[in-house]
Length: 153
Image (cartoon, rainbow, N blue to C red; front, side, top):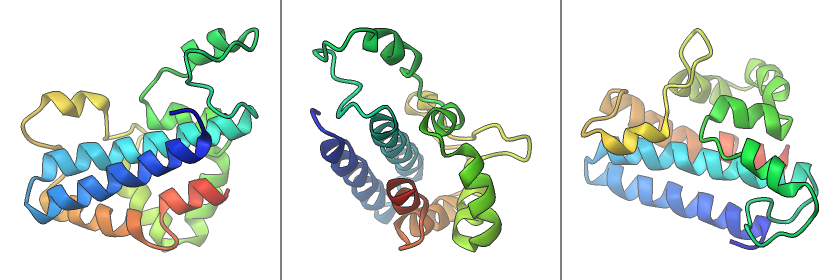
């Protein structure tokens, strides 16, 4: 990936793959890829926030970028929301949007801890129930869904 546009396309591709898995009742894999699509979209937003087309390109030679890149090599959606500058905006937006509120409630516990983790790739079953994953997929694909909200915010 060399551009923000490519990262955003990859995020959409992972969501499309998650939908295919859902359609075939492979819910754990669908949940993992859905979370990964959010992670990628947030990382694209971070690239825009820092005004570096692809902050995650190892060949980027901007002085100091390697230290920033090291700090951003997380998969934690809550941390990425902060780095993207969208954490407080999402808190406000979910009060105005049923879609964002429902998405948030399927990704985060009441404590604010994210249910999704890259560690899910090592499990046979996902944490949420299949019906919650199906609902999450619908919410993420919605015109007012989280991925589109991240992109336009």
